[in-house]
Length: 212
Image (cartoon, rainbow, N blue to C red; front, side, top):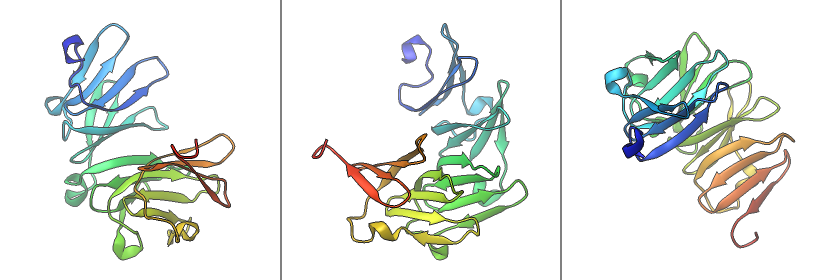
């Protein structure tokens, strides 16, 4: 808690690195815990905003810090702004992933998804086929497709950047998708406001309090 040195008691995300350090994304910045004490990072340390929704490990050993206003990169105890231009930098973000090709996908509160291939940023919104501009979770399947979970269901982006609605769910009640994960067997597990959905590459199965 804050009494013990945590920067804020509202914690949104937790990550452990290979050295056993814990990174806590909170409503007041980032706390790094080594098992004995906390080191805290805030806007005074370089964060673009103190509300940190997610901390995501990258292949180069750095971490992308997802905040209420912009993205930061954290490495070796130093924070720097991830500069994507004026529009990107002022955006509230929920999540980010790095796909198998090294491309970054950023889910936002109100501007859809940003894609960054290391050279340029491309924005996808409802104008391009998304079902909603609030994208809360992003995951890549074993075929390289990108799944976008929003407050209005699921979309899928193929390798050609074509966005499609998930037709398998067309007859179901619209759900808010809040989390996602690829299991070792390749199945995708989605968290929603009414339980869990598991996609095996062909069909979706739902698990909730009613069916165990």
